[in-house]
Every structure is written in C-alpha cells, then in structure tokens.
Length: 124
Image 1 (cartoon, rainbow, N blue to C red):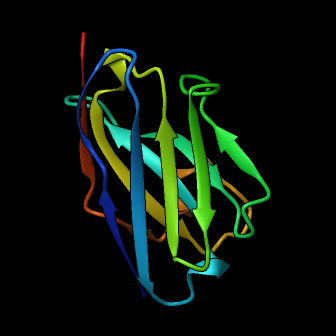
Image 2: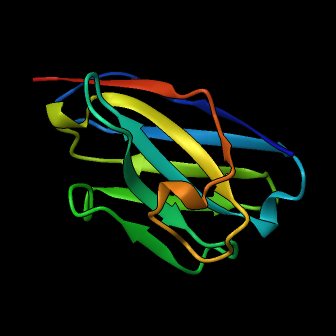
C-alpha cells in the first residue's frame, strides 16, 4: 500500500506560479513511477506529467510542456510539480498517483494509488 497526500494548491493570478507536493508513505516509494493528473469541472481526468522511479525520465502533456516541471526526492518520499506561467485553463483539482510500472506513463490505468487531490484555481 502507498498513501499519497497532495499539498500546495491555491488561488493564483494568470501568469503566476505554484508548486504542488505529494508526500508518500507506506510501501517503498522509490520503486514507483509517479504521475500528476488533473480534473476540471465537467471534464474527465487528464494526464499532466510523469516521472520514472529514478527521476531520470519525465513525460509531459502538450498543454503543460515548457511550463510545468515534475521532480522527485526519494530521500523525502516526495514528488513535486512546479507550475509556472499558469493559465485559467489550468484550473482543476490536481491528483498525485503512484504506479508499479517503473517507467513514466501517461496512462491512467497504469496507476495503482491516488491521492485525494488539491485544488488549483487560476484567475484571469
């Protein structure tokens, strides 16, 4: 079992930045690839970013590439999502997820554990 707790969400103006954190506990965190997904009201959950188990490989959706950066600190059992140049369309609940698949994946079905989510709201 892996428990995931997200933090760092909030309200920010367009063009601003936020850093989300996801603290993991339970089963060995460093063996899991990790991902961030988001869900806006009335929309399906969508992939944002993923990182493999070592942190050497990352993968981003086209909508956030160049603005968001995913990273991990295995010593702290934490994965981060640095979000810069935020836009109103980034408004969503952001979820952290852990996968037994070691390579970074954009596929929802590859993730075995999910956090409760943290709200990010970007005002115009």
